[in-house]
Structure formats: structure tokens, C-alpha cells
Length: 106
Image (tube, rainbow, N blue to C red; front, side, top):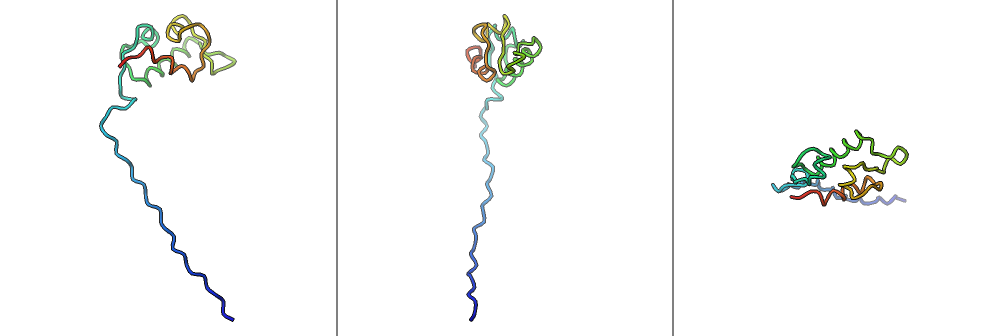
């Protein structure tokens, strides 16, 4: 009795993905925004990109020790930050970026 041989199955090779080229438009990281006077008192500059604004906010928060020592996610604003965040109540750090929207203009 002869053994039956299984037919070899051809497998398809995966095609390499090509990188998509971006157009020359401005992205969010290169767009500069005019900063309100309240926010300018905190970050120190009149025109910045959005990532620069958030970075300078964090520098200010850490320098003035505005982070809650127990719940590190919460930011307890001082007088300058309260004008930007809209009050003296603690703000979650993930909501901070949304609160600065009304203080920046294209």
C-alpha cells in the first residue's frame, strides 16, 4: 500500500506596505497660535505652537508646585492658572489641554 502525498499549498506572500507621503500642509505641531494675555502670563510668550504651550504649562506647574501631592493627576491652580482654567477648583491633567482652547487663536 502506497501512502498518499498531500499536495503542497502555495502561500501568498504579504505585500510590503509603502509609506504614504504627506502633503506640504501645516500640521498641528508646526502651526503657531496667538496666546491670550492670561495664558501669556503663565507661558511667557505671545505666539507658540500647541505642544510648546502645553510643555511650558507643565514647566510652570512643576515650578510652582501646583500638582496635588497625593493625586498626581490633579492640578491645583494658583491665581494665574485659575484665570486660564476658569476657577480655583482642581483640574484633571487630561482636561488641561481642552481648557486652554479658549485662550489660543490662529
